Amino acid sequence: MSDLLVSPAQLSAFISATFRAVGLPEADAHTVGALMAESDLQGSDGHGVIRVPVYIRRILGGAVNVTPNIRVVEERAATALVDGDNGMGHLVMKRATELAIEKARTCGIAWVGSRFSNHAGPASLYARMPLAHDMVGLYFAVGNANHLPPWGGLDMLLSTNPIAVAFPTHKETPVVLDMATTVAAYGKVKAKAMMGQMMPEGWMVDRQGQPLLDPNRRDEGFLLPIGGYKGYGLSMIVGLLAGTLNGAAMGKEVVDFNNDDTSVTNTGQAICVIDPSAFGDVQAFKLRVDKLVQEIHASERMPGVDQIWIPGEQSHLKRLHNLKHGISIPLSLTHELDTVAHQLGVATLAQTTV
Image (cartoon, rainbow, N blue to C red; front, side, top):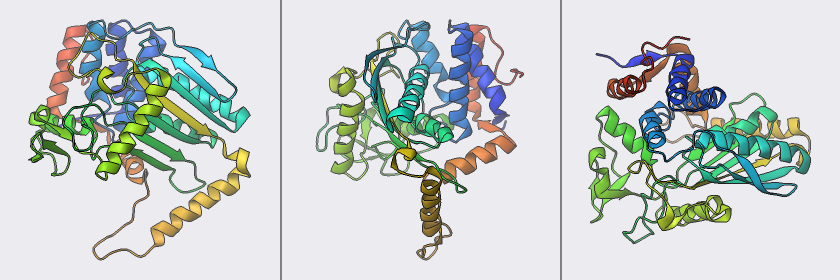
């Protein structure tokens, strides 16, 4: 049997139904479903519907608050700290990003941190939100499980700790960098296991430092940082900004949400929004970004290289492809989602209508 092809609306409706079934209010379930479907739509398949089983297990285990009081607990003109009350991370970060956009309109720049949040999907979801307002977005987060030791060590004290940055453009595709501080995000490792594929050499090593290629043996080793010791340092800095600064978990405090269905994670994230109008004409800025993109595209290429990519272009093309042809859900994941649907008494993904 082939993979299941679904529309974004169908996927969003299915995800929303699963969360309504475990107690999320209608509006919140709709928000989470839409953001998770957007993850798959843009090709971030390690952070989309594949996460439904884990999220549902944690909700049923009492680890996540389905009716949180998400609120601002510290605030100044250009900054705020949002307490997510242990709600779904997507809800917490959407609220934090909207607040940062509002503050950036007044102050030119805004920084909003979060604590007592949860896993919120791919970093680019939130860095991209300011693009609709011709603003720049920067997102930082503490990963929801430690898979990275300090450089030269073996104790898992750091995580993938992602960064995403998005710049608006005039005619070109927006420049969107979304990267873990490890060579690969852990969600990609899980996706490889789900699809029965091996990992490329360089993603993980075992505790003797030997390449680890089988994603089903991922617990026997750890992820490698980007750029060697520089990636380790970057992971630590991101964790301090997104976690420690907000009173959120970092280091030994981080809870592995993949294997713990009952503990509060106290996940920390941060969003920074910059309004280019604080620095000059917005249209002129966007045209300058376009000019740089065009110069990079036109630059001389090495032999055998057909195209030089700008950050965000490939995910943009995946989004266009998936909008036209549908989102492909691996058969193994479809079976897992069917099990969840039967458990919750909702229609399966294939049976979901919009």
